[in-house]
Structures are given as C-alpha cells and as structure tokens.
Amino acid sequence: MSWAAHDLEPYAFQKHLNLKVAFVPLLIGSYAPDMMTKWFVYGIHIGPWDLRATDPAQFHRGWPGFGFTHSFIYGTAIGLIIWKVFDSKLWGVSFIIGQFAHAITDTGDTVGTMLLFPWTYHFRIGAWAYAGQTGRTTDAAAYFSGLGCMWDLVWIVYGFYAWRVVTGAYFDGVIYRADAFWPWLNRWVPRGALLALYRAAFFYGTSRWIAWTVWAHVIHHYPYDLSWGGPHWVHAAHP
Amino acid sequence: MRLRSLRKWLPSRPDLRVFVGYCLAAAIYIAIGVTVTDFLYSFWVGVAYVVVAAWAVPMLVRRLE
Image 1 (tube, rainbow over the protein chains, first blue to last red):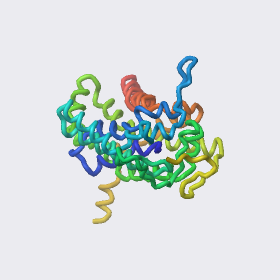
Image 2: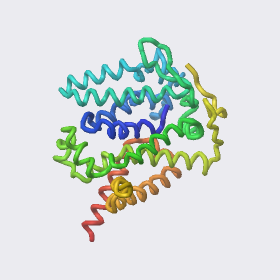
Image 3: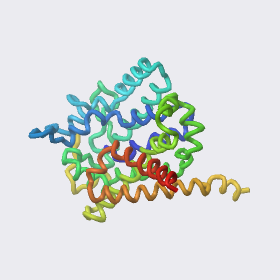
C-alpha cells in the first residue's frame, strides 16, 4: 500500500489533463479502493469489541476478500454508476482515472493487486514490503523505511515541480471552471476556504510524509532498508 | 531569453508568501503528528486542519488588524 502517493497523484494528473478532468472525483477515485477496507485491515475498537480481519492482506487485496476494490473492473463499474447517477461523463471518467492510478500504484508492494479481476492473479512488482498485517504503527515504520516512501517522494518532488497546479490562479482558471461542484459549494463556502480545500490533499500527503519520516527515523531510529522488497526487518505479506 | 523564461517559471512574491504560510502550518501539523501519531491517520483531520490554518486563522487575523 502507499501512504502519500494516493494524495498526490491527482495533482500530477491534473497538471497534464487540465480541463479534461474534475479534481474532486479524481481524488475520490484515488482514495476509493481503501475507503471500505483500511479500517478493518488495521482493526478498530468499538466498546468491548475489537474488529479486525483475521488475514488483513487477504481481506484487503485478495479473493475471497475485498481485493476487487483494487481492480480495473471495480473502478469502471463505479465510474459508470457515477456517470449515470450524476449525469456527468467528466465525473465518471475522472473517478476511473483516480481509481486506476491507485490500483496500479499498489502493485508496487509484495502483495500487489488483482488488476484484471475476476482473474485473481496478483500483479506485483514487489519493490516494498506489504506490512498491513503487523498493525498500523509497524506498517508505518516499515513503509517509511523502504522503497515505498521513496516512491511517495517521487510524487512529492513532481508535485513541487508542478507547483502552478496549486496556485490560486490555476484554481480560478481551471479547477473552478472545469467542475460545477465548486460553484455549487461556493454558494455557502467562500473562495478562500475552497482553495484551502483544493490544496488539502497535497498538504496532507506531503506533511504526513515528512512527519512519518521524522517519527520513524529521528524519534524511533527504525533502520532504512532500501533494498528490493524491503525493509527486510519486517515480515512482508505475499498473496 | 533563457533568464526571462526562468523568471516566468519561478514563483512570484505573493506565491512565495502563500507558500511560507503553508510551510508554517505544515511545521505545526508535523510537530503535533510526531507527538500524537493518531493525528496523522485521518484525512478529514488533515482537511479540517488545513482549512483552519490556511484560511480561517489568516482571515481572522486580517479582520482583527
């Protein structure tokens, strides 16, 4: 899984596609595969109950499980539903682009994704360890010690290279004009707050990347292991 | 010619002012997040934080001036 790439990829697509995409469904698409599953992968406490998948990797990426959320067919189906319900091809297509980006990015870890579901083959590059089954703290430490965090860094650097995408002028000239959602929201929310909302995922992804890196390597001294499939000090899950 | 195109690419003074504001907000966000890591997990906490730090607080300060 990726921790910051899904926040930042939509801005990179936005830079290249301009008025051809709507940012909000692009971002929702980028988060969509994990929306239903992430809480159950790490587990939550509700009163006396601990709810957690017995096999988090299987639940998150496998079949039987919710691995189909990381497939092209899922993104296409939800995109078509959005197109039909909102009567907006722009929203449907933007969602599909965001969801595809997430599904492809997650092939970078050792579990990979069933891109061509219902074919249950896991496409995986295996560049960094999938450690979701170890709990969210160890998963964070492992992710920010391996190549996964370097992949996130690529998106952060690209985001800064494409800095004009987050300027007020770009927001007014492209983002606001491309999607009726923003003028609709502007009826209740002032322009300054809309701009902050638009920049939120970029801020969140970048700040969180720095914070987890500081936490893992300055506060806790987890060792970096940038070898393929690392870090090898954590047990990596496989399909 | 090259200098002119480079200057066109570089951020203007108002752009830099906005960037510095976001950097300050990020520094506080990171400090809180490193101390209380639960703060870093929620996207919605991040969204609320950035709206407050990058829009509400500057707006209040401007009104008080």
